Image (cartoon, one colour):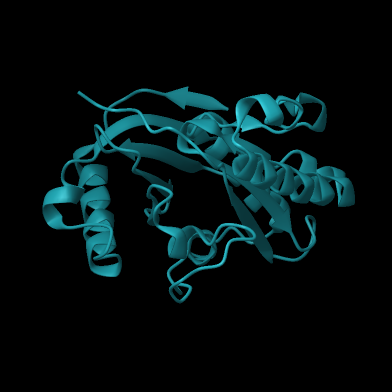
Length: 225
């Protein structure tokens, strides 16, 4: 893994602008031209084995981020990471939605991105997802022995939050126990109040996968001055 902090070429900047314009068209509820232009480059990660570049853009004074994946053939895909209020996009585990589930949800976007970049095998998709979570978004792997959030639930959370935390971690660990491979693809995106679990149908064969997203409850958002 090589982490790079270099400016984009003019051509790549143009490709990113086009990808952002597509987001404006596809997600008018999330973006407008004025809003999309406020996103700025934050960091970049490159997977040399599979020639996939991952770039993070964020919006100052907000919880919103955009991840851009691209390959050496010039294929590029922008993936929204909006705040947790966008429940129909995230489809959080074990939460009922008041509105209809959006067909333009996070799982659908990740499937589309992998197809565009011709990443076929579940194992490779898991590696790219791992890099995106750990190196780009700086999420931390979840290990059962490190679950201090469960141990401190009574002290750290109001009752309703504690119930959700325990339910989330039970589901997360049930998935981990089913496959040691999943153990390496479960992440705590603490800064954004989310947990992610990548599960391939068959890591070394099938291209199918799903990503379960859990909402971390009772997160106090920072006040920006």
